[in-house]
Length: 251
Ligand code: MLT
Image 1: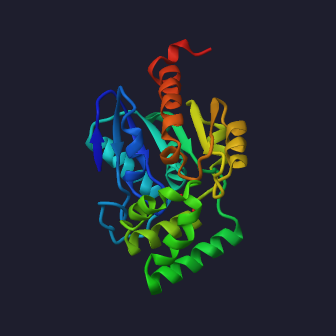
Image 2: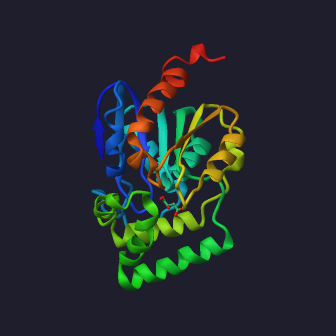
């Protein structure tokens, strides 16, 4: 886990099959404390040998906040990290000061999507994470030149972590109701070339969340915060200044 900078805390929750490294380009956002956990079985965190769910991931984040004696934080989630951010909002809304929902969606898996996950589980159990990496890598970024570094991040994922996350994502609940009742402002970020969670997902979330702003990033794929960091970081700074640091100025 990385804990850098000082100021209001932002917890950055990574996607699948990735690690906290995918948010390295956000740590230059000044005036905030950037906390970047690696979920169990990803990056530098070893697998914990238990089944995972969005609830268990959210509990891990809350336990980490308790340990650091942080009451409230901005919760930022990329893709699967967004599913966890929505779970956190459901379970402990009082701990969430604002949301950054990056290339994610509030809807659960379709039957077809779930079946695909379970097929991947069987494949990873038999052959390791290689096929998951190979099939997802081309969809992660718009620019092919980023693939070697993204592959290196993906390859820090453990077989156990990948299996646990696939099962957790397959059984995740619908978060539409949670977003409809969200009491905090949300910045909904999406790469305009995202083929995993396309702009239509972001548009639907913006229409659902009472206080939401959309941040489409040009020429960016699924890892839009990574690929489009130069576009995104000033947008995040302005959004947090308006809604989290000086919320009394809100209309
Ligand atoms: C992710 O980036 O976390 C995954 O693509 C999410 C998913 O497969 O639903």
